[in-house]
Length: 89
View 1 (cartoon, helix red, strand yellow):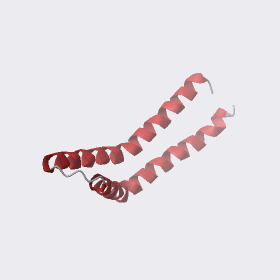
View 2 (cartoon, one colour):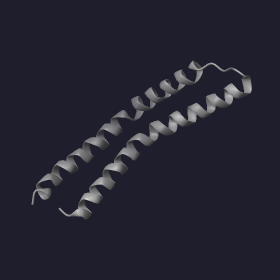
View 3 (cartoon, rainbow, N blue to C red):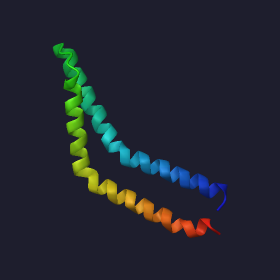
């Protein structure tokens, strides 16, 4: 295993993190933006008003996409374990 393989392995790991975290982050960002716009238009400055919808939406995304995320992560882990004998050479 040379430096190019190590760089590709790190690139793949970073890509996996981005792919798995992106749905959660996008939903949290969208819900936060919508709630902030509603707060600005109604002049309600309650902090829990932004916190509760974000948590609820994140939990909903995890409930809907949790199986896909776990399957994706398990496949990447299997790939890494298959690469261990090649790295030992």
